[in-house]
Structures are given as C-alpha cells and as structure tokens.
Image (spheres, rainbow, N blue to C red):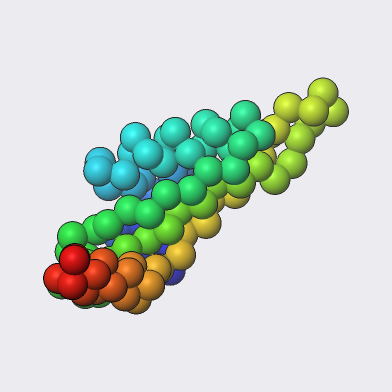
Length: 103
C-alpha cells in the first residue's frame, strides 16, 4: 500500500526509496530522511494531482522518524511512513474556501 501512496508502481529491488519515488517527491523526501538521520523527526504532505486510484488526486502525509542509534549514539535506522490524508485535506480545503467566501 505504501508503494501506491508514494507513486511507486513497480518493484524496485536493490534501489533505495529516494530513487524509486516520483521525481516531484524526491527533494522533500530526501530532506525529511536526512532530518531523521540527524535525530529530528520530519513530515510533510504531498499532493499527487492524479494517481492510479483516484483521478481527483491524493494527499499523502509522509513522516520520517529516527528509530535506532548505534553505540556512539548516531542514528542508523529511520522509518518512513506514508498515510493517505486525502479526506482530511479535502475537508480542510473546503473549509478554507467557505471561510474565504464569507470574508
């Protein structure tokens, strides 16, 4: 499921995640992973304008979290989690549009 959420449509054995995702996602994903390896959790929402599941697009929350450190205290493992937040993002956009109409 995470592969679909991140726009990865084929198996990529031997490739790291940054090289497997769509080009539009690479910079932000690399920055978030780098932050996690520095010990700082990082997350962002990426809007895919269209995807294989829904032509209306999809909003995906990508969170990178440090998981484990080596004996010297350096982070050596990080987790990347992808969560579909399309419904939440759509509700937020609709609320902002309604607010703007009233203002």
